[in-house]
Image (cartoon, rainbow, N blue to C red; front, side, top):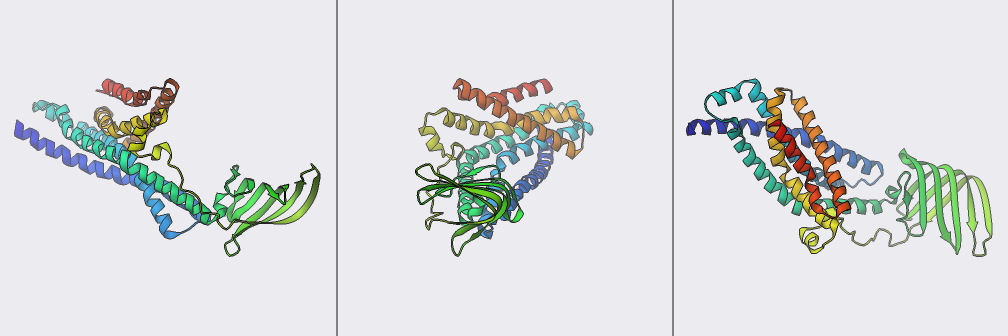
Length: 350
């Protein structure tokens, strides 16, 4: 009997490993699309520096392992046990005196190893990668000041000027532009229906070609002058030290473990609990996946991927809800709410 269990365990391990690798490949492809879209956005904004963009892509993709690994465990376990049930192998194990739940042992061991990896990843690697990626994107913005311009956002990063643009089309064709700046002690307000903007690195100037608008000038004695125009060329010379920014401060999600433990704030306590929750979730997903697979009795990979994605979305929503409760009550343990709820769901499925 012991030898038979060992043989079945090796069989289950092989099948699970194949499904796991398939799931990893699919989820990496899906998350790589998100990374590619972010890279396309950077390229469209004119901040294409091949080496930097390549590293941003890698950092974005590797950061997704926070989700890729748990999703792969969920898919592999549900797909495996669903097939075993359809092929009546679960029934064969039972009639042979082998409790099917004993076969979960190898899956749980794998999930435990995955949880250890995710613990190291979430506490030491992910914060560094997230911070480095944001820093690289931040520096790219200042290599091409046009990338600072955002639709329906007020741009204040350029010293001495505030810019608002309602719509930005390709080639930086703009709609509804508002610019406020000071010159010789006077406040200037530019408003235009449309126009274009380009950046000249040789002269370090942003050149706005505006149309159909007006310019209002306020001086120190509250005198107001107004100029209506059909076409207006506004040249903004950037400071010589523009782009020499101070090191950006890490967000809470980018803080190292030592910095989190050194602070007693609620945000830092929640972040620690959240990283632990995301580390143990592979074990919970294996439990749910095995019971769900036995009940589904479907071999469709697309179905298992879709159900796994739905469970993952539910988990993320519960994390947000638990985070809200933690902030309201000041108790960071509410971040464990999604784990408890999923374990209750597993209890009903089991």
